[in-house]
Image (cartoon, rainbow, N blue to C red; front, side, top):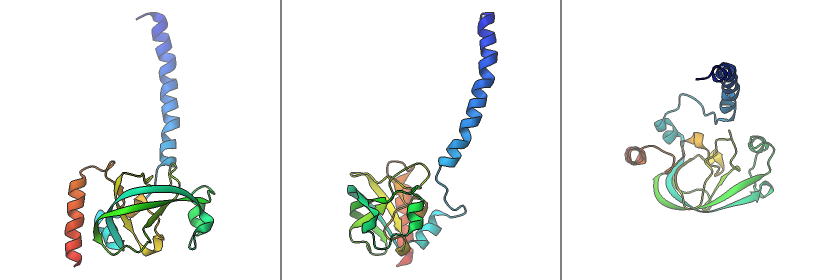
Length: 166
């Protein structure tokens, strides 16, 4: 190694370390923050409706058409006044009855807002409470089949918990 190369390495190594240290906290700020201490089971117990669904369509809509929209919900979306209306097909219901009129809702996906980014053609397990007004959040326990590890084990647990509730 040349002397110039060693000098450059000594200069740039601290620079890169400092750059990494500065950028790491950004990930924490942009990450979704769910309530700690909740388990998969406690989320299942709290939910009124849990189902395996396949998304058939997603459409950006104006929030003014929502009857029960709260300003708090749209404050989370950085002032956006739009939502995504999602059509879905039920594949398997683990708990409850469908109480939304064949639509799910979510805020437009952005860093830190805990949305799943529901995509047509993809399959999900969704957890909804009546208070959610049909809005799907990752913190409710909802998950995508494409991002989850060991989906078959999770589905089996849901089936077991559903049997216990009957």
